[in-house]
Structures are given as C-alpha cells and as structure tokens.
Image 1 (tube, rainbow, N blue to C red):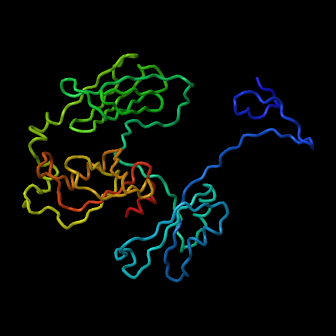
Image 2 (image 1 turned 60 degrees about the vertical axis):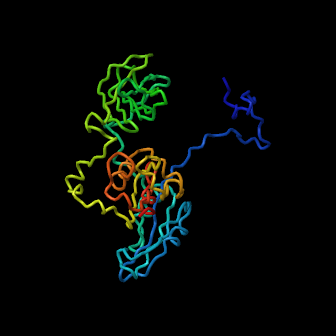
Image 3 (image 1 turned 30 degrees about the horizontal axis):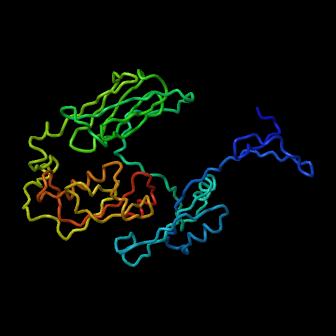
Length: 348
C-alpha cells in the first residue's frame, strides 16, 4: 500500500516512489480537486415602458466566471411577435455559470432583462411507471443480468424493440438485436425482485407491460407481443381511418383536401423518414446537435414519427393510416432527447 508521501502513480501503473522534497521544503503532494457545478441560464433584454433598453450581452460581460455558450438570434418573419411587426425580437444568450451566481443574477436583474434557467426538456412519452422517492445506494457488483427474447406471432423475433426492466434500484434499458434478444443489467437484488418489464416494439405490434414477472436467472425469458392486426382486421394491407379522425369527421372530407401548399413544423423527437409512409418528409433540423440537417431522422423516442404519421402519412401506393395532410410540406425539428428550453425557443 502506498505511503502518505506517495503522489499520483506513474503512467505505466508502477509506483513512482516517495516524492522528492521541494527545495524550500514545501509539501508537493497533489490534492484532489472537486469539479465545480455549472448551470445554464438564458439571458435576454425586453422592452419595458419608461425604462431604457438594456443589453443582455453587456450584463453577461460584466459578470465574472460567466461563459457564453450560445447566441440565439431571431430568424425569418417577426410579425407574430408580442409587440407586432415593428417590434425587435431580442437576441437570447445562453450562459454557463455557478448555480448560486445564476440565482443571484435572476434576483438582481433589472426589469429590462429576463434571466431564466435553461432546463432540460422532458418528453411526455418517456415511460416512468414508478415514482422513486429517493436514491438507494447499491453495493458495487451486486447486479443481475436479465436475458429476454421478444417475439411476435409464431415466435418470430422482433428486433429494435426497447425493453425497460425495473427492479429495486435504478431501472435498466436495452434494445433487442436481430434475433429479438437483449440482456439488461439491473441492480438492487436478485432476479426475483424485478418489479416490472415494459416492452415497446419498433412497429406493427402493441406494447406490453408485465408486472411482477416470473423470470429465470441464467436463462432466456420470452415475451410475446400481440400484432396490431388482431385489433384492426386487414391492417396494414388495407387502409383505414383512425378513431381520432372519425371523431373529428375528417373521414368525411373530400379526398382533394390533401394539405398541398401548407407548411407544417413538428417540434418533437424527430421523424423516421425511412418509414414507407413518411419518405416524403425530407426537411428538418436536429437542434440538440447544433441544428444538424441529417440526424433529425434518428427518432430515438418515436413520438415525433408518430405525430408525423398522424399529420402527413401518405397512402398512395402504401397501405396504412392516411394522414390529415399527406401533401403538406413538413419540417421535423428535433428537440428530444437531450434538448433544452433554448432549443425549443430556437425551434419556434
């Protein structure tokens, strides 16, 4: 065991021996450094009658230890801003700073400056079946591998299904491979303590929740999902109208109403344009990735793709549910997951 005078180990993993004393006799031991927490805040100016306009940049520059990480500037038309066409939409600064400094800035900001936390967005589609009131410490190495195989009718493997396993500790998550198999590691107790398993398929099947499942350790446990065809006869070979469309009497519209010439923006988790009914969706931006023009089609949650299907799913030559406006020009703006309020503002 290293003695009290031993400094950080040598790069090759061997002990470097006692540290040589400094010429002046000072202690040269390296002390661990704690990483100071930072938080993001949005800073912008606003017009207030009777007050001179303030500059958010001047305010940020006057503060020490504040790092500007992003500047959001208005784009396109400003006719729909709160002040009308003649108003100036302000630039928004996104700054990183110590949480205490940010709270003090919020409390002391003049009426002409808005300071708000740039918190993470949370998709309502996130599955959260349990409410953990607190964090439970887990002993190192105390975990269990849950082996699962997800299949459909006739035992056909279902790849790309997302599987959530909930035990006594933190939940585990995984995605099935081409054989429909996945191994999810959870901590907090043996396999008998697993509280629930939730399986979300990639397509054509109903999701499934299993509470208090009977699982076997060290063996493959099979979960079978019901196909949508059990509920919708002939689907997807024969087209159909969803219950929401019938409720709004959209099934009675003339087929010539296709949404042609209309532009629609969907701010969500992106859109999987590889879907046969959504291949005409070719415009978008991933605002969680610097506005990337390609990664918006990687929909990790699936909710944005679902909404895009409701709005614009094509039915010509493709079986399935027809969208409300299949000829509309759709822009998929991705803000989930990992998006912040600043990304939502940028999308708007």
